[in-house]
Length: 115
Length: 116
Image (cartoon, rainbow over the protein chains, first blue to last red):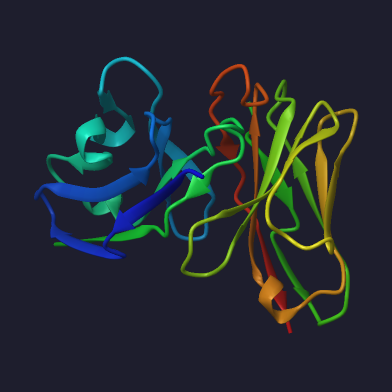
């Protein structure tokens, strides 16, 4: 079964610094991967997704992620953090045989931005 | 266009009671999925419905049930509530059923259920 692991439950960076949120997946074949963001007291919003093709995926709000099969990773980055980026971030993937509407989520990483 | 809507926003119940949560998908979306998000954890898949048929079920007890109506709205029912059912319940809709493609899931704001 597909599973995702997010390394680091809390990440704190200064405003303007690089944001790096880590996600590793387990699978014998390249999966489909998603990053979602959750602001306080809100639902989830899709940041970006990888399906096939280009391994560097650009999303909303300046975020991007690179699919690395050799490292089974799909880390999320943003060159310069903004205060509005403070939120919970989730990496997710579907069980391979069951389609994308049954996502398996990581535990989440809470991103704090320091002024 | 309106996004996914859920009602109620908050709900407080006592152990043993029953609860019904409601979800209206984005217009034109035929697939609805339900997730449970316990505080401090990622969402866990409960059910998916597509064209009024159950297409997937997560590892939840039979106390959890759901249905989808002809207008594609959906209800999640939980019977015999336990303290551990306290969570944010999220509904997500998408254009397809996830088999033919990878339709993006759009999430609603959730219903916060507290069981006392």
